[in-house]
Image (cartoon, rainbow, N blue to C red; front, side, top):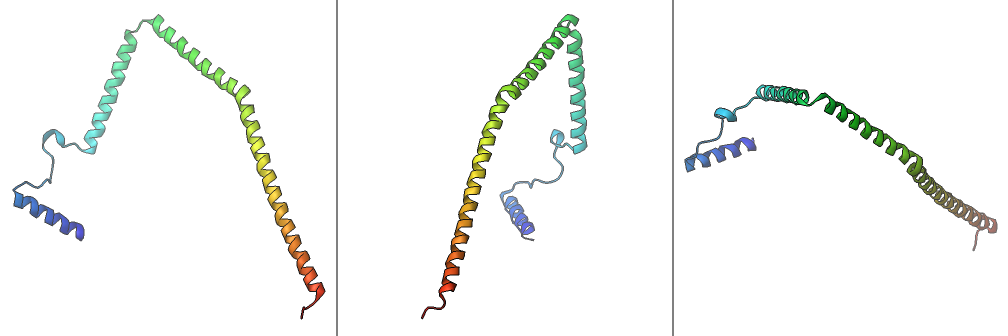
Length: 136
């Protein structure tokens, strides 16, 4: 309800200034529906596809074949780099992760041992307190 009242106040202020309230359909080229946008996008994609096909047809065959060979070389280089990474850098990374895991496990064991010792100390203290009996 406050939104409606606020809009009414705003429209009253515009009217007092003599400004036309912005509402309704936009004039001319500014009016574009979702369907119009989809149609424009489809036409643009088709135009680009035709243009690319024309440009591709204009390139001589031996140049296209050379480009294909260059692309294959790049893919091969990427594959080699990935294999080198797996062969050389991955074991180093896995070794570091294993060291960190072992360190975390050692900390967890140390903390568990400390908690166990604290429980044992509390049990021994309670045992001796009960063995002495009530103190006057």
